[in-house]
Amino acid sequence: MIETVPRHLFVPDRALAMPDSDEPNYPIDRHARPEEWRAAVESNTAIITQVDDGADDGGGLFTSSCSAPATVRDFLSALDLRDHDQVLEIGTGTGWTAALISYRVGPQNVTSIEIDPDVLGQAEKNLQQAGYLPHLMLGDGMIGHPDGAPYDRVHVACGVCDVPHAWVEQTRPGGVIVLPWNPLYGNGHMARLTVVRNGMAVGRLLAFANYMIARNQRIPGRSVSSYTAGTEPVHSSTGLDPRTVAWDSYGADIAIGALVPGVEKRMCAADDDSGEWTFWLLEPATGSWASVDYEPDRAQFAVEQWGPRRLWDETAAAYLQWVSWGSPAQDRYGITVTPQGQTIWLDSPDNPIKPTRLLSYEGEAAGIVSGPGRYATGCA
Image (cartoon, rainbow, N blue to C red; front, side, top):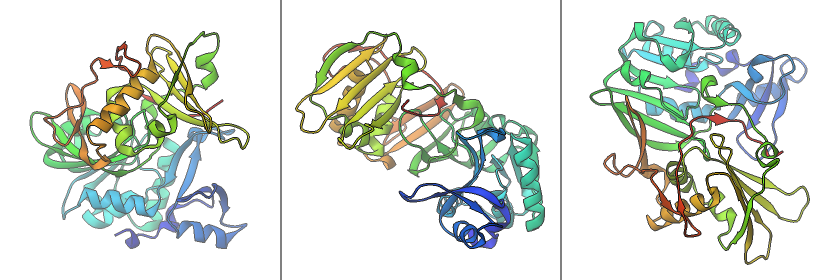
């Protein structure tokens, strides 16, 4: 399906290519280096089209893009579009996916919402050039577009930590919502939810999917030093390798994020070739933090914790709980969304993961405190 609408019509002359590999990002310029520009556009490469919401001196957070073709294919496949479906898209971006959806169901059946007026203006030009004119709306996609409801399909092109119930309300029973679910802890996941009854949607996590976070679900970035400054942490040690906890699998991340809500992880390498790493756990709601230092050939690793929560104790306990469940993989988890909020479950909606009080790794009672949102990362 993605071959039906030329991608090059939606990529600006100058942008930043983000390869689907370990290669670094690199600038592309259609006029200065046309062959390189064309190669990037025709490859499985995400193209960053806006930084820092379009600020003149923007050089940090990526805020709009033309997603990699393989990712677009996966999302549209999960959406399972049918003839005459009424489709709501959250996040127009460059307009490429709006055009692809329009090709499949007809532009008269597509409503696409974009929060940024400049991004929407350029998307409209791109769509006109490509010959597609879906309904374009400037507004907050988190509240959807109730005037066009009910929808058969909702395609979400920005990451969310908390799934807005408005999308469920505006989707007919049996309708499908496909979205990038980006919890605070770990990477993002593609979720496919089906609306069932009583304002409820339920579905599974299908694949890896890291998307730019919706603007009103961001939390301003904080450096590690802003957490640690002026604090006097409690010192201890652990035999549990922090790399194991941080890097085991997407399944471990989902479990830890559900059992230890409101916490972000960062793995920061030493500036030299020593092989040393520091595993940071940070919670914006209370300012609690923890660090575990990995050093090669050590039997024990140094732990520091500060704040009302003992984040390493909670996280280590959650990781070992996941192991005791048989180390379930990503595709065994799902989400239920109701008017009261969202629940993460394992294997069945009848088996929710409840962030109650955990027995901490060090043997103390660890209280769990919720904390919503998402923010940019960094090790400084």
